Image (cartoon, rainbow, N blue to C red; front, side):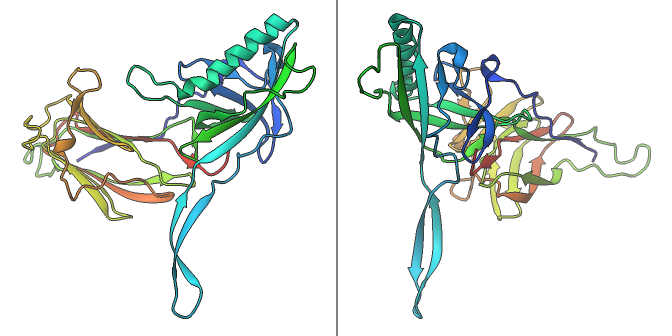
Amino acid sequence: MPLITAPVQPPDPGTPGGGGTPIPLPGVGNATAFYTDPTGTVWPLSESALGWFTLAEGVSGLGAASYTLTSDAQPRGGARLRHAQPQPRTIIWPLHVYGDTHLQYLERWRQLSTAFTRTLRRGRDKRRTPGTLTIARPDGTSRSVRVYYSAGFEGQGKRGSGIISDSVALALWCEDPYWTDAEPITVHRETGALNDFLDPYPSVSSSQVLGETVVDNPGDAVVWPEWTITGPASLITFTNETTGDSFALDPSASAVGHGPLTAGEQVVVRTDPGQVRFQDGSPGGANWSGALDWPEAVLWGLEPGENLVTFQLDGSGPGSAVDLLFHARHETA
């Protein structure tokens, strides 16, 4: 059976906020920084013409994540590492805010304060939405980390501050300590036209296996991909041969009761947090978590480096496809 393989095609990188002045950052070199608040508004952090800029000294928390190590004592002395748990990180980001007049300075101060503290407010869905700190390099690449405001927007509190200028040392708390690439990595597998066994001569076209492929995770940490399955398919099985983990999705499972996917129907599987949605046109899609082969199912991640992955679709036909998408995760900015 022919396989159609699409190469990795990251989107053209954009420059949030429309520009910025490179600033020296420890361990990073010259870079441009942006903050995107929960409403999607982009705030350049290194453009002094806007009335604020990042102070060159004092930025910290951009290096490797910290870990809590769990070990087992050994009978002959010493210990053996059993588990390493990455811990949340805190980034310290100093800003200087100023204006030509007190009211201009005050307006800028209030706007920035709201942009960062908004990460602690609950939205209509009763959830708090993090902001995103992005550091862009001169070569056009960038890495981002999700942040919540923790402390620091109280100013210096010394004589003369708070009139037309003041400085803050923002403490930004990150649930996930890893930095992610802005550009996604994608893998596409699709069935070609199935051949008649006797026309024009005896041949075989598999209706089950889309193929094995090596997926390279170029980052420093496990990534949790998103899968989009397009029918037709009666049973979907994804296996990471490198780790031995797998999961299967049965559209005919009693908890779903849909029957095999027909041509063009899609299911999206997210691995962190675990979520399975059938795209039926409803907001977010119908919950198909019950279609997984629990309790054996493992919504696995991709280890750093090369992973041998198998996509298997029983009942596949022309148009059957699997799309995998993930963002590489890194220790440092």
